[in-house]
Image (cartoon, rainbow, N blue to C red):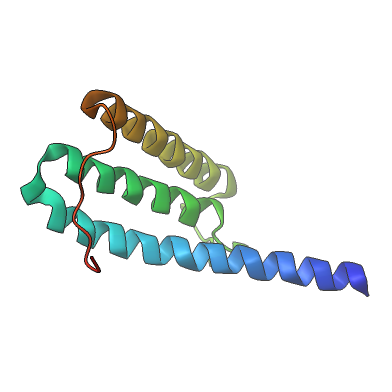
Length: 108
């Protein structure tokens, strides 16, 4: 009984993280548009956030939603590639700017 409860919690956590990834795609695309006037570095931060959200969304995509072209291995490869690209892009921005650039947020 305890193991079934733990399995249910882990599945629920996976779906919650997937939902946050989907929400992150929308939010990061919006914030990318808002940060264009601040310069390329600020916009690249949100492109990296978009790639991160896409990677999380694809790697945690529920099997019931996978159809056709999103075969199991292709989904994992694209998701992991997006995660790696996000890390490399953010690292490049950090090294080029000598730290993280100023960004504009909706709620601040």
